[in-house]
Length: 367
Image 1 (cartoon, rainbow, N blue to C red):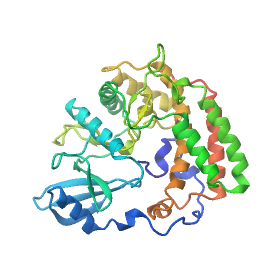
Image 2: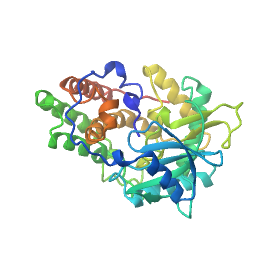
Image 3: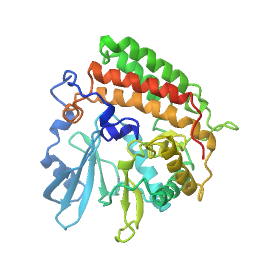
Image 4: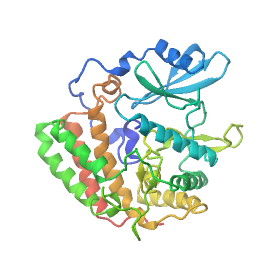
């Protein structure tokens, strides 16, 4: 899901997050503590894949993901889903979307069909298995790379626009903003000495987000003149795009391929663009122009969505804090996010939300 402090794509970095002691551990037991290497291998064996005993844990906080070497010399990637996060119907909907993308020859890595299914269960966990795909991070300062990504995003969204998700939620003010803010306050995760100020500033920020009809929970995306909402990747940051150089043969060909549709949701197309932008306004303007140039070779882009970039960034900022707090009982979180939770952390969040309020009042980027 999220990738450390790079989650806010150019705004939230290790340099502007206050280092702090973690909040108290909420629980000494977590379901993922029971997921042993033997259980991973037994799960694969249950779907007809024989591992040779070599497992490599891959970077993932939301789920547990392993690269597994098989006895036949090949390798697969298996994902064990966080219990209680998605229902089987919601996971299957993601898998079906991946299948649609594959049928349309859009390079998104999806799960394999094994014993007639893509979603499996073993030892109390839901899991899936995907082919291993190599690659490196994209060079986002290269306009040609951005155009290429834009073309593939347009093809991705063309498939996403064919129909709507039935089970997976939308990305809007309520699901990412209000629900996250309410949970943090109701569960007293913001220290008392900064709680009132954070509550006030987060409310001011969300009030500005609420001025955009397309981010409201009851927004009828099909009404005449409305910004169209569609099925998205949802978490399209650079870490979820693998780039295959043109001089390296690959099963999916050179260029970008998308991984990890775990956060696929319904929302505006620009959600899959803004996390690829970084730097000052001029740099982001240039990057966005290259993305849209590539995008519009395959699909029209509604310029009104540019006004949603900073509101979407604001929603992600608040959602990210709630995500960390909700996951704190998972032992991997205190280890990897030791700076989270103190008064200094929340003072930093207050400053960023104040900055977001100012930016949301400015003229949006244009292309």
